[in-house]
Amino acid sequence: MRKSSSIFYLVSSIVSGISGFILISMLTKNFLPEEYGYYSLIITTVSLATTVLIGWISQSLIRFYEEFANKQKGNYVINTIIFTTIIVNIIILLIIMLVVFFTKGSGIGDYIDNFLIVSFLFFVSESFYLILGTILRAKNNSKLYSISVILYTVFKLIITIVYIMQHGKNISSIIYYYSMSGAIVSILIFLTQIKNIRINIKYFSTTILVDFFKYGIPLIGLSAMQWIMASSDRYIIGAFRNSKEVGIYSLSYSLANNIFSILTTFLLLSAYPKIISSMNKHGKAGAAKSISDQQRYYFLIIIPLFAGITALSKDLILYISSSEYLEGQMTLIISALGMVIYGITFYYNKTWELSKDTKKIFLHALYSGVINILLNIILVPRYGYEAAAYTTLFAYIIYLFITVYRSNKEMKIPLKIRSIFKIVLCSLVMYISVYVYCENVNVNIFHLIISAIIGSVIYVALLAILGEISNEIKVIKSSINKLIYKSNRYSK
Image 1 (spheres, rainbow, N blue to C red):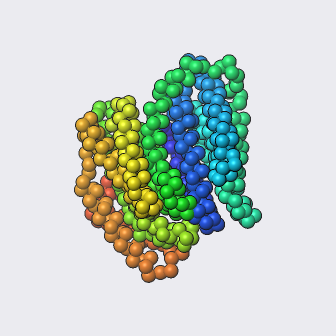
Image 2 (image 1 turned 45 degrees about the vertical axis):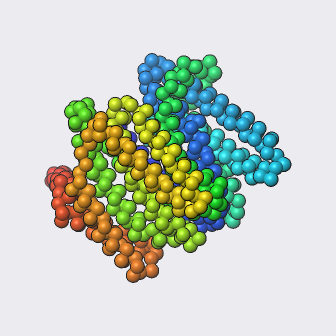
Image 3 (image 1 turned 90 degrees about the vertical axis):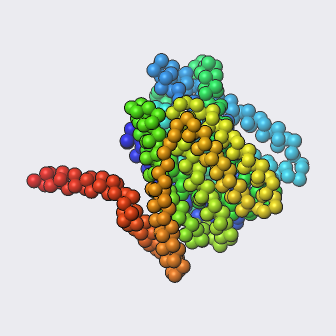
């Protein structure tokens, strides 16, 4: 991946993440937990449907587009995926029409009808947005792809702000408008690419479709299992408890997920090219060392982040949402810990990504996903949404344990124990400092920022004292000296 591409992806991820926080804040401040819970179930349903029904097309497109384009068959690929997406949407529409017909007049008919109709419109929008965005990624058009992500995110944010300012009370309407936003961005992407695309059914290729299906389905199994561990608990909470608990749980989990996913995604995007390069130059031993080095950076950033979230959990929830969601404070902490453990697993999964044996990754996720569902079914009806946070954490621990155990048989990845000990120790001191500060002030946005600065300064200073970041300090000093030298040369 080129450096410029990484920068574009990082910028779009940051904008998307910040907008996500603002959206969560606006929705939870203006809608009750049960209403936000209903909204979360729709978003979760569409996420699953998109992952399972469209995701395999998207992942296959990224893998094969360049290969087919080199054979002058790029137009066949694009037509095949577009018409396949249309067919999938038609099939889903027919299924929904049957469900609506058979539930008509029943006690839950109106609820089911509204849920399915809103979900379907959003799914249509998301499916084409995903496919057209993937075309840009497959063509290495990172700039336009990042712009489309930012546009879609900003559109959703503006729509939510306007709707709430107009005193809108139906949260389903917001999702209708999201669908319109996705459709608008999809049309804009299509218009930018229309000169390079000839849409005609004669370019539809069953051979390409079969190749995509064979490659993509195992990866979708993996994505589905990862989705199960991350989101299936909301259905179980909704089925056995109520929408209010879904709303409280969804807020806490979404906060943790939004915070960690931005950094984890960027760290992994930055790490993968280095790991590949080490594998090509020095084989498995070099790749293992590179993974270990990159994993250390993960710990350096993510562990103190978890400590900070734990210290500020109460204030984060109160600032982002309202006191009605405060009972989910422990869920936020447990979900954040789950994100930390889940992120570690990605580094050990590189063992099979490098050897192209992704089936093992799927099997590990499958075992953990099944355990998660069974524990949720057993514990959530009795103990409520908090149990779902603990079962998800346990599933992530099992996933990590299986992955590490089997990965070490293929590629022994050194774990930097001394570094981890220093990082945890510094993070603990940082946590105590931030917690004590927040307990002695009336926390607002100013004090939240000050507490984050205090914690960061203490953490970095302790790492420097312990000698953990001595190499990084040398690199920074060298870079500064080079900049000073260049500026002095130009000034002369």
